[in-house]
Image (cartoon, rainbow, N blue to C red):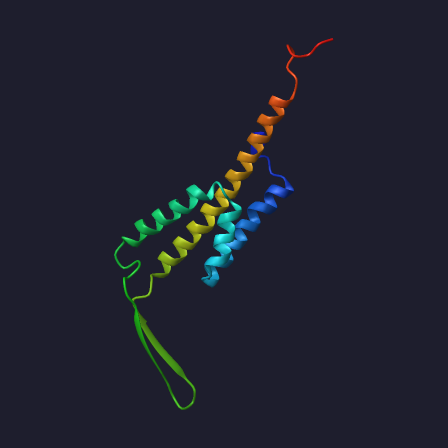
Length: 137
């Protein structure tokens, strides 16, 4: 296994925290955790977020995936039984697929950030260490 890909506790926690925040954001429908995860994965999220929207747009082209409008009605009885009907909601497979893609892309961005930081750190160590020609006795 390449040393940049070797898991450590800190890197694992970082990737899992990004995935958890993204999952919470998609499940609750709140953009705040998703945006925090995207900010935490900079610079990789500069690529992963446009990829998410590209995947979303391509999946939305499938007929019946994501209607352009929704409507609904509801009623309740004197006993408190509520009935409602909605039409035009996104298909369940579309929602699950796009949410899963969002979580996977931001988690992959976190992994890419770990690899990038490790590569930069290794490069600095190589530049900072004296070369055999530079050493004087």
